[in-house]
Image 1: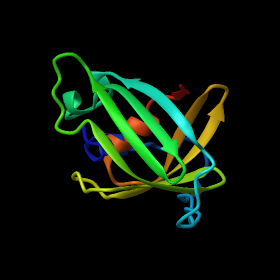
Image 2: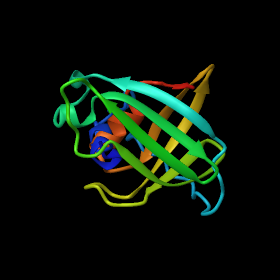
Image 3: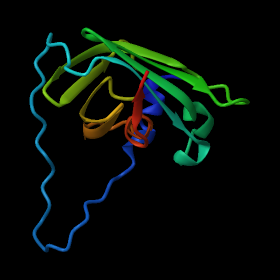
Length: 150
């Protein structure tokens, strides 16, 4: 399945919680220098259920593997049995600095080609938080569940 199609599902609106009457301000993305390999390297997996998506469930549900090597990434889906997604693999450039990573897909699969996420390690797992992305499936794929190092 195409990562771009999956990434729009990740665009689930996350509401800020809090009792303050002060207006919330969105974080300002830190510029990610082109050509800088992200600090995060390796292969990671996660799984998503049909219920994790509002639409295009069969296009996005299943097991996902994200591999980051140098300044390249691959995102591959093993769909659920009975599902036949349009795209099951997406590749492109990955650049980063500190705790941010910017993915730029090689081709356009229905979503913006470039997106930025923060990542945080937690033992053998990593969690992504969206900084700038308009692709709902991709947001769900990257942020719904933790990614386990392979």
